[in-house]
Every structure is written in C-alpha cells, then in structure tokens.
Length: 107
Image 1: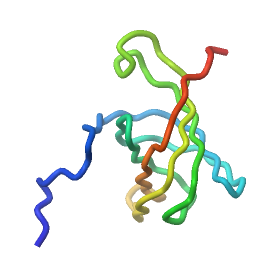
Image 2 (image 1 turned 90 degrees about the vertical axis):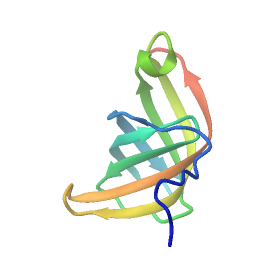
Image 3 (image 1 turned 180 degrees about the horizontal axis):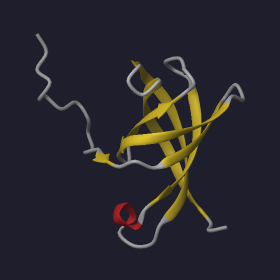
C-alpha cells in the first residue's frame, strides 16, 4: 500500500495557474494551463492527449513571485511522465519532467 504523504519529488512544486504554449517533437501544438510547477517538473491541463515519453517544448511567463524579481519568459524542454484523464475539466492532466530551460529575452 502506498503512502500518498511520501514525497518522491526532489523539488517542491508551487501551485500556480499560468498559460503555457506547448509543442511536441512531432510538431503538434496546443495551449495549456499549469496546475503547479517547480524547476524540475510541471503539471498542466490540456485538450490534447500526449503519450508518456513524449518530448515537449513549453513557453510560458513566470511571474515575479517565482523568479524573485521580474517576470520572465522561459522555454522548457520536458518529457511527459504521466497522463491523467480529467473529465471534470474536459481534458487531460499531464505531468512532465523538465530536462532543461532557458530564460528568453523580453519581446
């Protein structure tokens, strides 16, 4: 029996709803909204069902509360680790591990 209180994540996730643009390695594009994120992972809701192991590129704006200063555009390279059906939201919940990210210049 698994204990849900046992945390497997190395970094604490912060509950935050942010819009995010997603592009898969296969070229599929979609928009999503985060549920929570950390420097090592993100959980988001989207209308598209991504398969586990899918490589993603995500672009989002981190608010100043998360960057300890100014808001920042970031581009993340991530890999899908889990997909959940979310019928109450009419879409899918996706957990992805962030492999790397870079801060983008302000447009």
